[in-house]
Length: 292
Image (cartoon, rainbow, N blue to C red; front, side):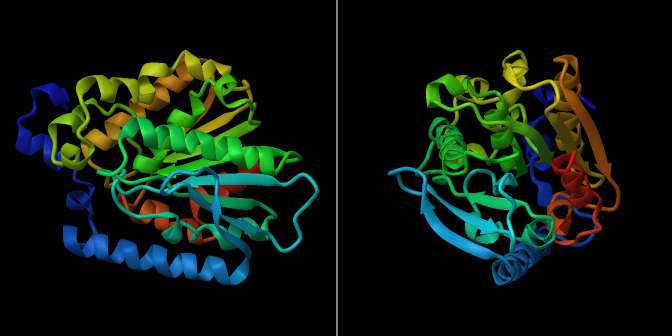
């Protein structure tokens, strides 16, 4: 695979257009199907769990989150924080409860986080918001057995940025024990030169400052037993797959506990939709790391 710097604009934009790589349906249909699936999944999640919706974690626009509680939470439950995808400009927490049924069944609290979308929000603000959402949550639940992160696509980028946070700035030390990062972007520099950047307006400096690949030494602040699972779809683009592989290798090189999941027969969208299924490989991965 050629370096992205050697690609022309057309090729680069194809690489960063996940809907063009689905093996199941065309690009318009796969996005429509994705919205339908995560909407249906979230409706089911809200029907089976006790919910606290639209909880404010700050004073700014979009600084809201939804909390899903298991039927009989333990005194020291595991808590999963989910960051949605949508290229930092689409989707919301209101479509982010689809993994709730199998996880609350196992006694896990799930939190779905909103952040202000581009173009209203810039990347520095969005990253700051998700970090503050984590600080807020751990202050609300001081007896957790552990905090776990999950993010998809742009949300995986945000989860990775949370992993390299200097928590001294936030006055908390979250007990982050694991993360599942699904089909993520860990180097923002290529997207500066694509249509994705039209609402974001990232400069090269913005991209570097907000690229998890630039901060691998900082992630050493994490406990050595924090388990980071980097997952990618078989039918993600070559560039998305390359980004996931390179991030995983960097996490390993930093001395952290990491594993790589190349999920067969999935594309950029159903790889995350299937978390609604208890027996799905990534659901089982989440349950395993949260019950170690």
